[in-house]
Length: 186
Length: 154
View 1 (cartoon, rainbow over the protein chains, first blue to last red):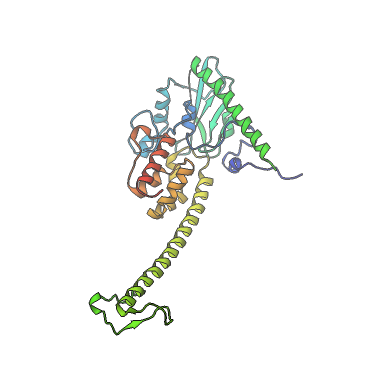
View 2: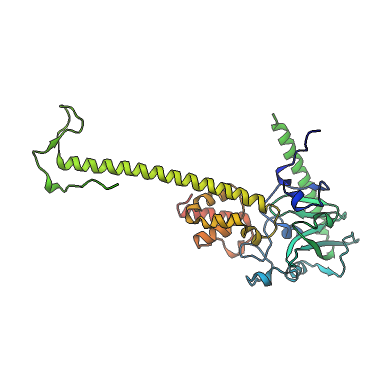
């Protein structure tokens, strides 16, 4: 049996996300325009981080110890209407949209994922692709550490519609890009 | 290389005539003019030598940059923190290359938006990005490309 071809974007997946394997669906092309925090906050045109070259919804201290904390990231999502769930319940809760935050061994935030209305999770992997994965554990015990916080807010009609429209746009975009690639094959 | 002595016009001597083309029909020129020609010749040769050296340096800088950039892209592809992405060892080595890497960085940024902003800021000690555009990678790219054009790097 010939060895399975690995796409360039997925080359580091086995080392950085050992649980992920092929249990995900690619939802976009790689992009440096936004990161996982932005994507969890429903944006895809700017990079969210408490860093001088990035966007952050409130003033930052430019002190790594103070800015890169779970509490600071939690506050950013509170400004978007999310509230902390006092357990790590990642199941779908009717009427609520959830985000999950991952932290490393030093308790520094490493990643955020957003739940879809159907209960899947959406993650932007750094400058790499967006993926849809079934559960949060698939990105744990690797580059992103473990899930430390889950927040939720009531679904808003605008967000719901936006998500549905975006998913249609993304899938048609990927479909057209793949057809183009296939047509270009020798 | 030491440049040949450049004679001032006062050193002109009618008797010292040479024929640089080596034939009898050539133009007779004075010693002074001959010295000037030698000087121009030296400048041209020196210029070419420096041009070749500059080209070789630029090529090796470009190769070094490409190698480090590829290493950086591969190691930081899945990181979501700009802080970690720009503290990567390969990225720091690119910053350490200093101003000679500026035109390459700007060309690379012009080609494709990527997180080169910290490096550009550190090397040039400037930041043309307006505060309200921080994080908007396309606007930041545009600001830096314009800065590069204004400063003759692009």
